[in-house]
Image 1: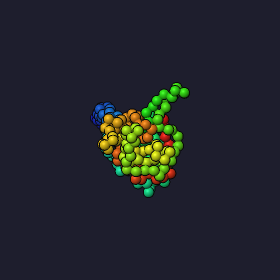
Image 2: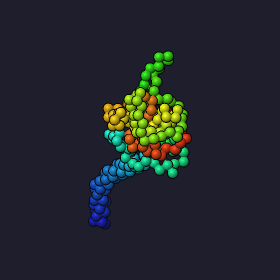
Image 3: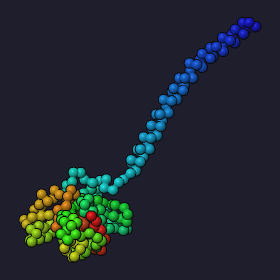
Image 4: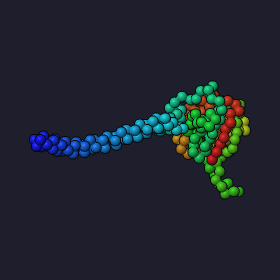
Length: 218
């Protein structure tokens, strides 16, 4: 009996020693594993939110190139657009194509220069603000001798040829005024029209339907 009792006591003692040695290691390994799994889950969540987020204008061409389209993706297929309208942000130097509430294409643009109104004392753009509509007047080029400035690919949206979407300006010889073209998407500079890159202006002339709503803000 005494031997059996000794064996039992010795066995229990060994079991306690083993438990004291093993249990802390198990707990430590679990604690190390948990942060890793949480980090992985957080990373997956961030990846999902990043991959699904598609902010307007995410395909904008950088740096700005007035000889190329403003975005690096194709222009929208208007046959699939249900509610097309255009928004011109004069202060932001951007022109947006919308389908309802969704921006479907963003163009770099340059609107009218800002001058202080002598009567009101407020600074005002040479480009009228408000809601207008695309008119039938459009063409491949024009030149205004009085202003000594022309442009290519124009589309009228007010006063039947007075206020236009058109390319960056051209000189009397038909070449592009590169100093003025460099303002595209960066600052104001026109006499009232909305300047666009050469391909953007061409696309507008060839595709923008008569009657399309144009909202000018700023």
